[in-house]
Length: 394
Image (tube, rainbow, N blue to C red; front, side, top):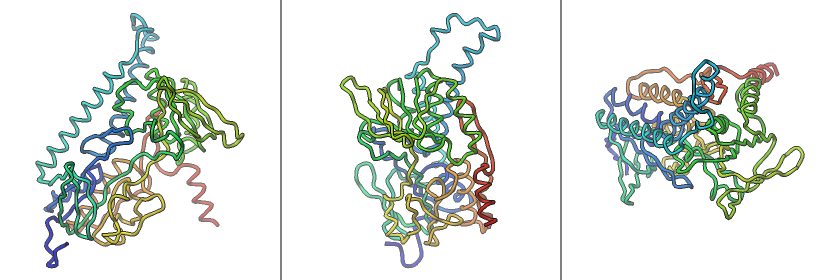
């Protein structure tokens, strides 16, 4: 139980060792706080797991950008011929998937190591355990060997982020991968079906096609939802010109594993009601992400500001329990971007331990989509701006 006299093991406990949680923890220590960080990665349905650092470092921004860069380099070799470079044989130029994934994973492991050393140097207690609430000020972590680690903290920051969502169709969980798996996939992906046309889906389809693997994308509604649709159309047009196949207004129906190990995917066009199917080597699900709040036992802390999607609704990062906060992708209606989580985490620590008052500004945040035609933007999309203006006038 939390101490009655108001003394705690830590001034701050952070659940989640990703960008936002670590930034908050480090800033708090710089301001004199005693801090602990819980972090544990539950393996993906395909068994993929990784180290400290969160989504961005391990299965997000960093490996994605490295594979995007690999794709750019491959294309540059072909383009170099037009500029006078004498390449022995363009037909012999191909990617070594094992060499690429090994290089990517080695870089990630180096970042994992640097992150752990940084926590040690800053005297932040890193607890490699799945943390949850026991009561509003007590956290319990389940270690790998099944034992428990219990601590008390005056303040708690929830920064558990999210994981890829799997659609409820036959074969999805059993046979499909997600962005949790693609960057360390133990074999070349081959002909790949990407289900979903958000930025994760389009980025993966883009670099896979540029690396030499045929890619097909199922688009449920619109590509790059939330981004300016005129620009999204330019992105998908460019991808189609490069050979990526798009099936619009389609939803997946099932994924079946054939005797030869390939996957037969079936889908439905929601406008024409026509069904389609094809055989692929890999099916990658990119149908959104869900917040990892169910495992936190939030009821024990009294936190009840949870949306239907499982995310935490918290103005100024503060939940309905005054000493419990949330930062990063776990927040409802906030940009799922590493720089946003980092800045919000630092500002929150300053408000908690330095008497600061500055709040995070979530408007007009710059972002980039690393599709073959790279797309950077800041501010509202045209569609959002029109919606807001019409809503305001009405």
